[in-house]
Amino acid sequence: MRDANREWVFAQRPDGEPDMDSFELRESDVPEPEYGQLLVRVRYLSVDPYMRGRMRDAESYAEPWSVGDVMAGAVVGEVVESRSDDYDAGDVVTGNGTWGDYSVLDADSVAPVDPSIADLPAYLGVLGMPGRTAYFGLLEVGEPKPGDTVVVSGAAGAVGSVVGQIAKLNGCRVVGFAGTDEKVEWLTDDLGFDAAVNYKQVDDYGAALDDAAPGGVDVYFDNVGGPITDAVFPRLNVDARVAVCGQIAHYNDEGVPTGPRKLPQLIASRAKVKGLLVGDYVTRFEEASEQLGEWVATGELGHRETVVEGLDNAPDAFLGLFSGDNIGKQVVRVSDPADD
Image 1: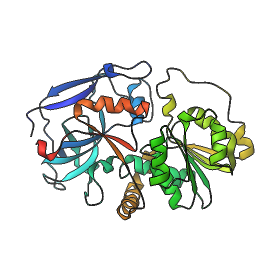
Image 2: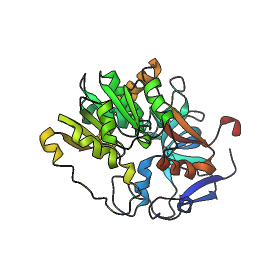
Image 3: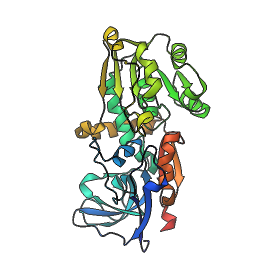
Image 4: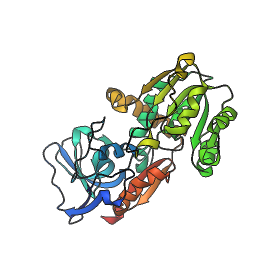
C-alpha cells in the first residue's frame, strides 16, 4: 500500500467550459473503512459527461458538488481491507468511489468483477453504467422493432456505441453521428453500423441524414443535442420514438439556447420524446448486466476504452470528453498491481 492517498478535489465552479482551475490534487492519510465497508485500491476510474452538471450550483438529477468535495465517480479496484463478510482482500469490485489512489466503498453497493469476461476498464463502460444506460434507453424508451431505422448521436461514445449494436441485434438499420473519420470507420467496420456520418466534415446535416437514412428515422437516441438533433426532428417517421440521454453540446452553455422551435414537427409524426435516467431502472440492473455480459462474452457486443494514464491526468481525461478525445469509454488508469 501507498503511505498516503492522493485525491482530486473540486476547487472552483467553472464559467462555461471547465479548465484545470476547477481541480486541485491533495494528499491525505489512507482512509480506514468502517463496518460494512471496503478499502479499495483504485485501478481505473471513470470520467463521464454528466459530471459537468454536478459542477453547477443548481438542482439536477445528480447532486451538485460543493467546492472542496472530493471528485466522485465509478471505479474498479482491488479490495485491500474488508470489513464485510461478503468480500475478502484481493477481490476485484466496481462501485461508486472517488478520484483517488484509494476509495472507501459500501460493501452492499459494489459488484464483483469477472476478468474472464472482459478486462477491468470494460466494467466502467459496456459492463457498467454506460452499458446499462444504452440497454434500457434503447429497449425501454426507444422500443426498437425489426426493420426500424435507428439514428444515434455521439455514436462512438461509451453509450452510443452500445446503443447501435443492441439496435443491430434487434434487426434495425443503424446510423451514427461521430466526429472523426477514425470513429466513423470503427462504427461501420468494427461495430456493424450500416452508415455513419462525420459531422465535422459535412455542412448540411439534414442532407447527410437523407443519404444515410433515406426512409426517415424511427428511433433517435440523442446523446448530443444541438444542430444534429435539429436535423433529425423533421425526418422523424410517424410514431417515432426519441430517447434523450444527454445534451453534451449544451453542457457548458451559461444560458439556455434558443432557436427555431421543433415541437410542431412532432404533431405530424406523432413522435414520442422521453428523457432517460438509468437510475430509474435500478431494480433491473442485474438483468442488464447479465445480458450485456453474455453479449460481450460471445463477441456479439464490441467495446473500446480510451485509457488515460495516471491519476495526475484525471482532469485532462474529463476535459477531453468535451473535445471528443475518446473513442468508446474514457477511463483513467490509476494503478497496476505491479505498482503496489
